[in-house]
Length: 297
Ligand code: NAP
Image 1 (cartoon, rainbow, N blue to C red):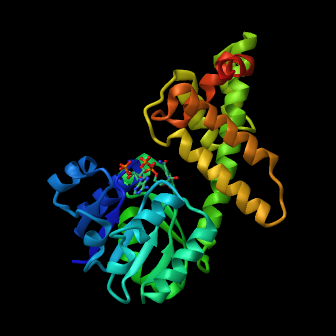
Image 2 (cartoon, rainbow, N blue to C red; image 1 turned 30 degrees about the horizontal axis):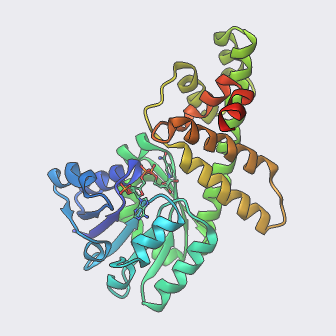
């Protein structure tokens, strides 16, 4: 039975750890706030007090935490996982983080004899809970093959994207496009509502016509129904857009779009939707930007 540790039991990490358990892996879990582990412990996971305790003796350690800072804390902070790992064990960073951070982490892992893969995912809560994520993996193909059994327990598609950092970069590109679409959808629906257009006809045109990507189809329904049960919180999308803007700038592309879309998600956070789904990005727009500006004064 392969021993796998999962660091971070938020929306995504909890589902991923659950899939590993369901498929017979010996799973140790750690989360910064311990309460979130109880359900997994009830299902057979071992609870570790620190990332180092979780990582000790594991063949594979997967991190699924918020951002670069959280990833740093989990791998390299006090009682961090990396230094506790066996030589030759595999660290998989599945959080959506920057390419620069992945490269720093890979160098630290290399100096400790640990193999590092960047393995961010596309898909959301539903796919995490059902083992249907798509992994965008960066790193040596031979290491991807060794990690494959665990990756396949959590995902239905494992894409080897290229050298270290390729998965992280492709994930930022992916979420850049998602974030810009969602922000423009929110502005569009708010415009339709504020101008008195029929919202059902509007939704039909937007979701069944040319703009109707899978993301637009899903988010339009949630925005119209005000269904904000959290799948992906707005602060994380703002973070992804900030990281994407940085990646674009690093390659000579100044993205007004990434920055403007990111601002929309931050406005939702500041308007009280920090714990809600990112579909709540439409709420401040329902009031109009003038109202938001007035409130901010
Ligand atoms: P989430 O539910 O907000 O959970 C965030 C996790 O990060 C929690 O376990 C949290 O611990 C932990 N964390 C935050 N700061 C930390 C720190 N300084 N040290 C250690 N742990 C810290 O987020 P999520 O939706 O699962 O997303 C996790 C990652 O996957 C993010 O990078 C996100 O961008 C990416 N992602 C999300 C989705 C999605 O649809 N949700 C899809 C694809 C990728 P506490 O419980 O203690 O706060």
